[in-house]
Length: 135
Image 1 (cartoon, rainbow, N blue to C red):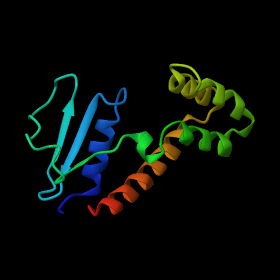
Image 2: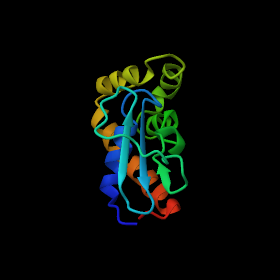
Image 3: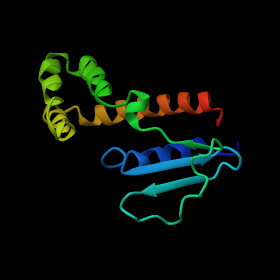
Image 4: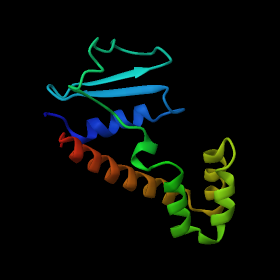
């Protein structure tokens, strides 16, 4: 398949922007062409009628690659272990990521978080691509 990893990463980021399941992304296994669909209707082109066919790969959501809350917990254990219980409790309520990032800003760890998140996202997505046979 003729597709660049950066194209997959860009589509992954679009799919995972906002609330879960608001956006969808697909890669055609035959051509490498990517497709994006947003529930908000700002779609440049319609999805193919056969998008549910096995010739298309659906771009995963972060949680499918274990990049949700567990990533925040892993970061906390490594960079702010004394705040672990507090951060665990933050994720029991709505708006957790905003509070988590606010806590990180206060602790001077927000840049480390963004680097940690980007590194682990790229690693997980590359592994997914390998399993799918697309890179």
